[in-house]
Length: 166
Image 1 (spheres, rainbow, N blue to C red):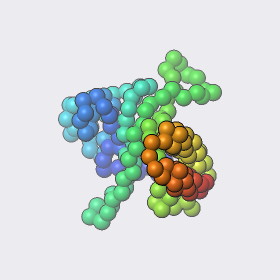
Image 2: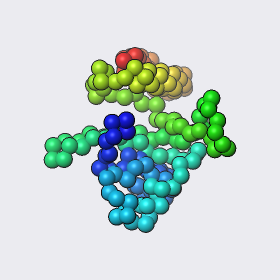
Image 3: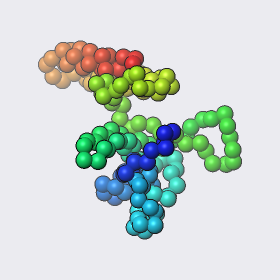
Image 4: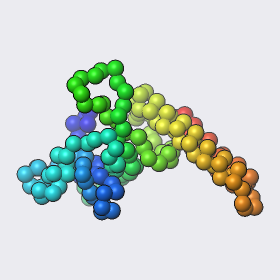
């Protein structure tokens, strides 16, 4: 966005309304196609306002035609966000990742990130570590199988390693 690049694909869509792949009610981006060349159904989806409670996919990616492509996908819920700027009656919205899974460190070029981007990833990884560790401990406490302590130790070691600050 900051660099004025336009993906040749949408970067998100609704999830869960009809168990379809690309469904509304809202969509994010429409790629590089002129809106006049898009079907009426897609036009409604990409022009529909995003509201608190919507589940959306987040699919940033980069494709170099004829060479390669990469896309990292995640599922988000739209939530109201506090802000010290309050204009009008509409709430300020933000996103919360539905699945607390750490980003693959091998795919992150840390030196390309701005400080606030690194801070965001680090904060997200703290959330991942806290939520996943709580679930690991809950399941270990429930017991029920041999080797649960070994599984817990191995899982926690992976979690600690993958959620270290960048």
